[in-house]
Structure formats: structure tokens, C-alpha cells
Amino acid sequence: MRIIRFMQMEKYSKNITPVWNRYILIIVEAAEYYHIGEKKLRRLVDEHPKADFIIMNGNRVLLKKKQFERFLDDASYV
Image (cartoon, rainbow, N blue to C red; front, top):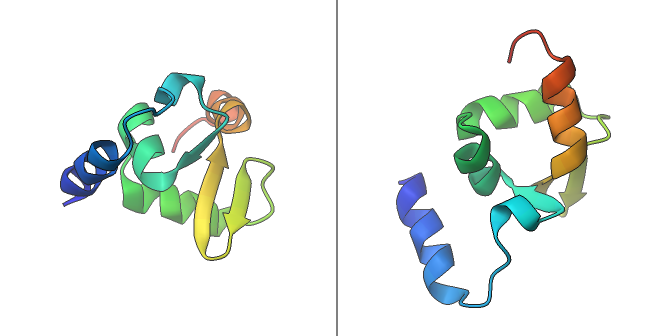
């Protein structure tokens, strides 16, 4: 299901910046990039609502890539 959604997003955006060059990632992109499941990422967001790597755009969760990478570097488990 998520791969289909991701492929649909790619189909509609021809001039898209590669994921590794982006500042902010949506949950689907972050799951693919970091090889962490979408449910696990959403659970991390729920467990750390005030974390500096989270941006809420309405009800959409966005992750700041560099700050999230620092969070992962400091984490002993995910």
C-alpha cells in the first residue's frame, strides 16, 4: 500500500528534489529513506511531541531530516 502511494506521488511530480537533498520529509519518504516502518515513525512522533525534528502542517507530520538524523544517532534503540 505505501509503495503504491509513494509511486503515485512520484508519478505526479516530475521536477522533484531527491530525498537526500531535502530539508523536510513526510512520513512515507522518511520510512523509505531510513528503512523504519511508517507505524514506528508515527509512534516516535507520538512519544516525542515536543521534539525539535517534528513540524506539524495541519494534521500532516513532517520530519526535519538533519535533526531526525541527530535523534537517531543519539538513540540506543528505535
